[in-house]
Length: 318
Image (cartoon, rainbow, N blue to C red):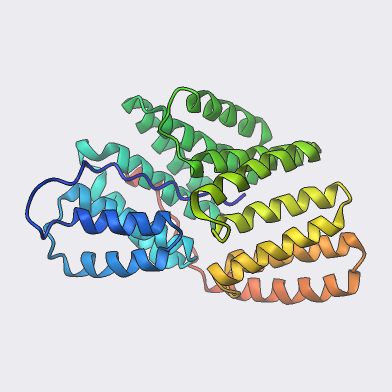
């Protein structure tokens, strides 16, 4: 279950101060990232943070690093995302006025760890974020963290914990008006994954459709997270025996990934492997076998180049 980086910009309104303030540029980068343009956000943030000539406050600097990490993560440039998140956490953890942003950065680092299969690290980071949000009395933050914990538990096949965390997320979501379409979409995607595990295929399709609708409403039809959603719906269609719709959704997911992140990426190759499984189930065994072999080989090569042994000690960010 691929979780969404839950970047939350908790900076104050743009003040009337010198024109070399960093905040307007951070806000511009945030709007670009939120609109599905992570490359454009990076083009603004990288020079700002490297040159450091715009009079950052520490809260602004931490937020900028967090946003840069989310932008690199969206593009699956994981080593740079990791470095940026580390800088964000180091900057924000001691700022009493920026604890909500710190919790969001912990959540975002956790989604990176989960994407790379480091579920224990992801869980520790997310629990830390949840504790901070509880101390702050922030139901939106708790809902986001609990949704992510549910997704991590699904990945670990701990469905009892997943149900408990999802119930907390739903309860906290009802207590706030601060959640965005992205937050609800991720929640619906986790609901869909759990329904799929339970064999409730119609419920899985209904839930992921709500996620798709939310992401399209927020970002348009080419948003990168839609690839994950269409692939999840493809699996539900396949389990229902509707291979025509399953294959169409899987192909749509691959097309979105190809444009958004490229072919030689973890997301694309994982999706291609899932597509091969649906092909096999549909009866196209020869084509499926060839595709799975190619994808698995490319995926193994790619994973061997990922950072090995570079997980973090969550206790270090407190």
